[in-house]
Amino acid sequence: MNWLQGEMARFRESAGMLASTGEILPRFDAALQAPAQRWVRDAKIAAVERTLDQLPRVTPTTIACRDGRIEIGRPKDLSAAQAVAVQAAMKALIPWRKGPFDIFGQRLDSEWASHLKWNRLKDHIAPLAGRRILDIGSSSGYYLWRMAEAAPRLALGIEPYLIYFAQYLFLQHWIGHPQIFCLPLKLDQLPDLPALFDTLFCMGVLYHTKEPLQMLARMRRLLAPGGELVLETLVIDAPANHCLCPPGRYAKMANVWFIPSRPTLTRWLERCGFTAVRCIDTTATTTVEQRRTRWMPFESLDDFLDPANPAQTIEGHPAPLRAMLLATAA
Ligand SMILES: C[S@@+](CC[C@H](N)C(=O)[O-])C[C@H]1O[C@@H](n2cnc3c(N)ncnc32)[C@H](O)[C@@H]1O
Image (cartoon, rainbow, N blue to C red; front, top):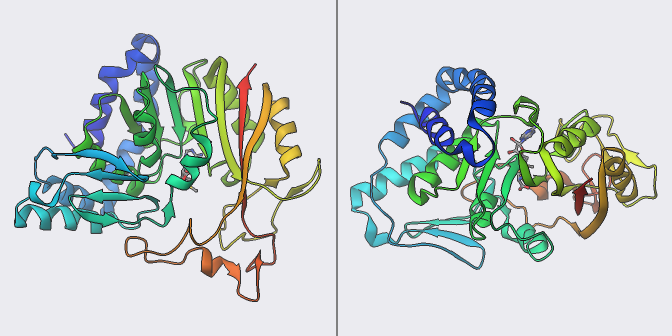
């Protein structure tokens, strides 16, 4: 059984926490066929699997979150040879975008200081205890582990980019949280089953789709009536009915399609069946939150802004401004 099949088997055993397994499992199995083929055909993933296979089977003496950093184990939990195997896997999984973590004493600073975003939302959202949660674009799973602190019934991440999904597998290998799962799916590959979730997180994803309204409508269907959407996305500081559709790249990203103003985003949500839309935070992204690190050694925010005018991207668009909205499924 490869590492993806292992996670699929775990999910199958617990999917009854979402809905009747007879109803949902055949749909999930069908949805996972294509990603499962991608997983075995991808040469980089084959190399990653080999390093994951070398991971020692030790139980970390601590799993904790301190000042937003998720700590797994202490240096003394590993022999020297085991520490080498763990480091090799961490390196094979570069780039680490979302964190921070501490793995048996090795600080793993990711590109994003993700705890800053979590701090902005944690006191505003409906309590997660006992809820069925979906995190769209869950990357390494950093937010899934933070959600786990509140004892949800089940938190499922979906992350189509296989290296980020493999980062989750690496972390779950140690944490082994029974309520946390991740599958390598895009939102439009997830079975379109109504009312599966009570809280849905969609952070840093909406601007990556050419069809933002279809994506919002899909999220509305996946939520039970009264369920909560936590939506974080790029916005522009502009009045209602304004939306930036960049002619080419935005902050060097080729896959950014629509950046609405906050009132436009609110209108989109209301048109897609959400009520009680409220903005709980708007923050301009800075290099405190997004920067190059040893574990993400490629270009980062500094390289995406105009050096002569950091209020603009290198292409002359407004620099990244992110809004966090909550909305209720009508
Ligand atoms: C900018 S990152 C945001 C990660 C995290 N949610 C956060 O807020 O820090 C976007 C993530 O969403 C994933 N993604 C992009 N399009 C997606 C889609 N249609 N469905 C699910 N995930 C998607 C990407 O692979 C990437 O890991």
